[in-house]
Length: 130
Figure 1 (cartoon, one colour):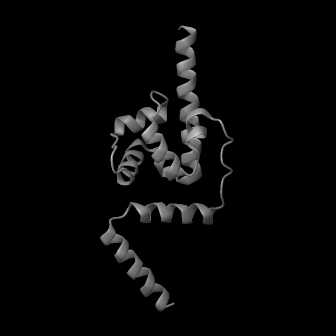
Figure 2 (spheres, helix red, strand yellow; figure 1 turned 30 degrees about the horizontal axis):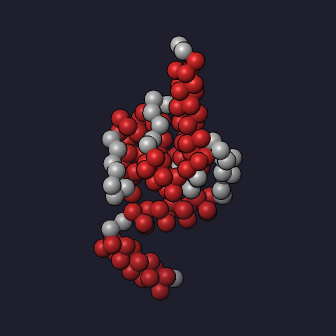
Figure 3 (cartoon, helix red, strand yellow; figure 1 turned 135 degrees about the vertical axis):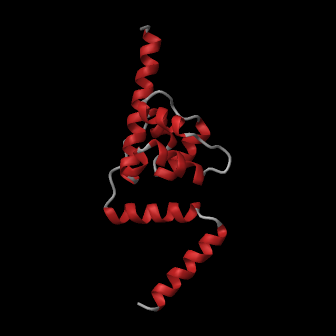
């Protein structure tokens, strides 16, 4: 293997480890390529991925393109620079409540406008009867 090939392989491996670290800090269920692809596609308006693409990201066979990195970084709460290049330190793991709130906000954001209204009404009703 040539030096440049080894460097590319190492770069993909390092990028994959950072992605997995960010995922573990957010929701370990996303370590499944099927779940990652489904949830990514729920949040992406323009760029969809297939399960094999998510698998390649998680196994170090490929690095997400810039627009996909941007969506991943916003979703997982890390910087694009860290996710792609490891420029910044990995985020410190948040406590369970912060993870839970972040997950709820991200899931809510991914809902259709109609579903958001339903969830808001449900919460209002639950608070009213507590």
